[in-house]
Image (cartoon, rainbow, N blue to C red):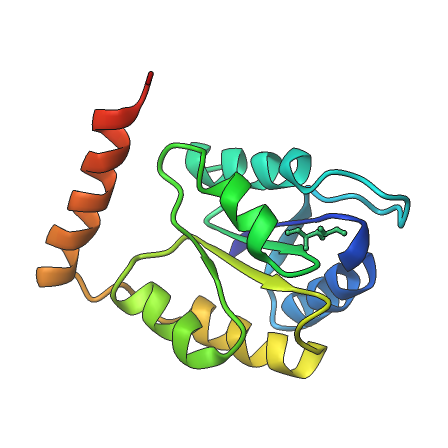
Length: 150
Ligand code: RB5
């Protein structure tokens, strides 16, 4: 799978470890994050990976900052994006199964690489269930459409 990854200065090392893990599984990983540990602003990097997912350049996105929260908020401002902040695999799995999330976010200051790997496995191998969940996801996207331009 072609996967985009983005990070701010807090997550350079985590991004490298995640990239190595995903490549070891055979995924192609495109880097949209910073490679510098100099302080920077997470919205810059979140928008880049979110645009890549929204345009179809990559199939899924991974976005990492200190908590995962700031970069997820930035990603979710791009139309078509459903970015989920997770800190354990159950939410990562159900974020795909029920919410059809297309970007997984987490905090480099919150979890370690082994937990990140478990979440990545859950997120990248779980298909959206559809059915009643499709209606709910459609309702979310309707909110986006009704409120765009405001
Ligand atoms: C940077 O200090 C930190 O605020 C950022 O990485 C992120 O956690 C914000 O949500």
